[in-house]
Length: 611
Image (cartoon, rainbow, N blue to C red; front, side, top):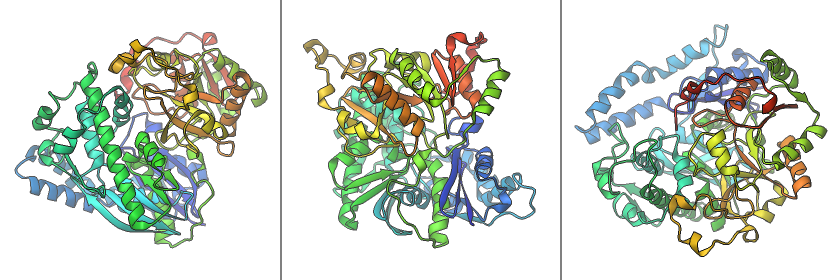
């Protein structure tokens, strides 16, 4: 009986994960509890949740493990400033007090924080894994492969920005790595910054904007910013970047390359930003494919696992799968730093304690449904406390009723089962709509999510029907693969429509499922499986029975800048503050028109920092 608690914290996306004899018990990001998106602070509430999920106190935990090694990170910081001196002095003097006061004493700080979670006088042993080791472990150990290559791509850990590992049985063997400042993740983040989005938050917007642009800056990037070799290894030209020592990502030399200064946050998007987004996406895909080919050649493996923030680039993932380099790929659903908490815990179990591992047929992530859940009694008690009228329906009544509601072009908030771990809503904390509706994308973006109109929505589809609608043969349970809509569903463009540019193309239906079909006829797919989410699967079945369509629009249950909803209270507040039509809290169905008047408070949108 061994419990291991993993922690990631103090950069972004703090999280906690608990495993018991190698099995994942619970995992959650701190942001879901504090309501601060990408919260970097010590994950006190996430840890409390994980311990509660196992019904144990901290004194029953055998090991606590942190997801990176602060002394190595400090070494990188010092060496970077020394190598770039005298540049970056302002950044240096801003960073040093924090490091000298807190981060160099991280072990003491962690022990102090952990002591606040227990009355016991003794704490579990505290261990540290390396950052990319945590990423690699989070990708390999839960994967369905017994032997596989592992590719980790992110901004930066201690030193590594790209690393390759061989995962076999219960061991990860490092092969090689590329180090800071040469980073594909930081390159992509530099363009995120330059196009006016928030770094470590808005990268997915850049990816979503790419189909509206033309790849006219690809050669500019390859000639000036990144030297990519045939094996996928690369070097960045640091003359154009400021992130190593400065307070911004790019500099004036970068501005000259791309026809002017960075776009101001929240200002109008122009064709330049769209073309830049398309161009850096093309370059990213080229690097990922070349690296994957090298992993295949060097390790002679049939499978590949991916982790690190770049692994959330589902367009690149789709291109990689389509290339057929490997028989299959598997991506950790919490591929960013949050997943490091889980990887660190699994690394201790399998590598430090040398415990055996047997790959499962699908994977051991349990559909990523690893967060808190609430029963109907708790939900009804809350609804009664706020005098919210609701109906209680058993599943046999609820699911067909919801199918009818959705088929009438209503928007539904779905809150059921355990909350998802990772950035994607997968039918536990989701907002749903009818993909056949021409107006659904704009309604959801502007009236529900309060976000940019160009942002695409993802389809959820019954797993066994995926190939009928999309050019995808396998599973995509974590919404981390993009594939094309089958040509049979495409709608031809008129001659006039074909001449349109950029954002002008937004409102032209591309297929008979217009709400989920992106400009280039692609979609970010979630396959829904009866084994991991039977109720969401049942809803899709009911919708298919009614409409002959096994697909729903699925977006995260939140508004722009807000973390995914965690509790019934979070869900009800979001429901009442937006123009959502219906809300489902487990078996409780709420109709907006029947709810008591909600005090209009426009200031609530200021609660959440825009991403």
